[in-house]
Image 1 (spheres, helix red, strand yellow):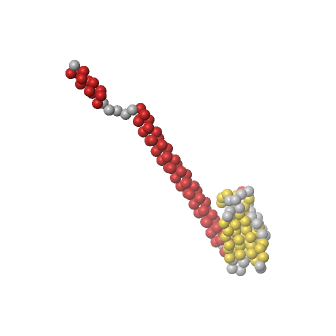
Image 2 (tube, helix red, strand yellow):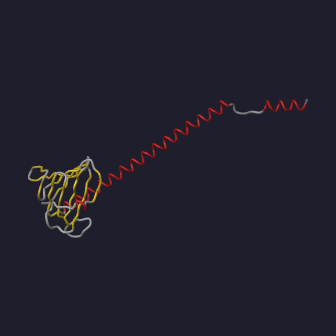
Image 3 (cartoon, helix red, strand yellow):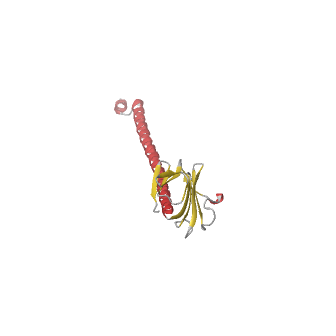
Length: 174
């Protein structure tokens, strides 16, 4: 009898969680984990987008700086709307005077450089073009004698370069 009383007291005093309480805690932990994983995923995507955008901006800035360096030191320029040919002393691959070209076609900008500035300035070898990148728009306009020109031979007063949504104005000393 004493033993039976002791056993019934043990069973009555034993405390535990009900199934409803356990399920409620699991739902709350799942909601917390879901919110945290979504926040982490969103932050990760934002940082990847930011890294991609900054890399593109860096590429565009370097391209425009390098183009300006070449144009300012150019001795001869021939410009068309989406092509720029020049003889310059600021080559990337060869020293001294070089013939180089920026050619935009099919949404891709190419660069060409040749170490000897002889022959037709508009000549380039298709298989030696160096791909600089994909851009939505790339064009040139020259300003000389109070007028704008899409096609120009010589050294203009100003050269307008449009790269996607950015525009660079290069003042040339004539």
